[in-house]
Each structure stands twice: as structure tokens, then as C-alpha cells.
Image 1: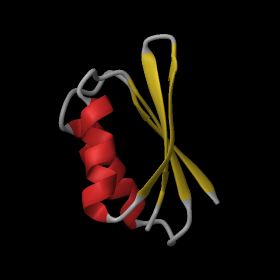
Image 2: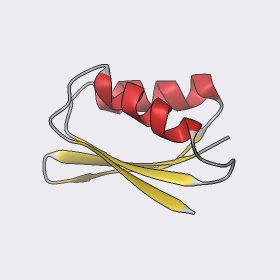
Image 3: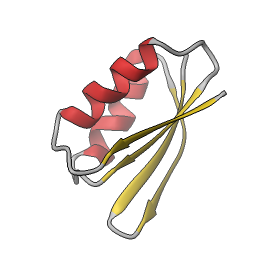
Image 4: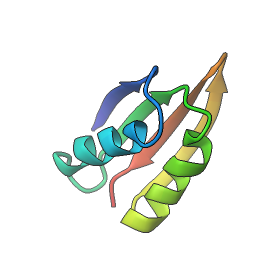
Length: 73
């Protein structure tokens, strides 16, 4: 199952904190699609995934925003 999180306009550490909170309510294997425009997110989100046992499936850019697909571990 796929879920969306719009974290645009939020600065570090809020995109990661919002993603963490959203992932808590999901089942293992579910995917969270996160949109963020915080420049620090390109470092913070992959690090969060690795530390929390989630998989960063994809990371791409769309204009000034970054798009992340996180699969809950």
C-alpha cells in the first residue's frame, strides 16, 4: 500500500520527524511517498532510513522539490 506525505515548506528536522511519525502507523512493506524541499533532506532522509531499518526505494527531483519513496522495514 502507498501513502503520501507533503513536507514542502518544512525545514530540518521536520521532514524526517513527520516521516517517522507517519511510518509508525503503516504496516511493514508499505511505501511512503515524501515530497520535501528542504536542502538538508537529501542527507537526512537517506540517513534516517538506514538508521531506522527502512528502505529508500527511490530518490528523485521534480523542480525544486525532492521526491522520496520509503518502504517501511
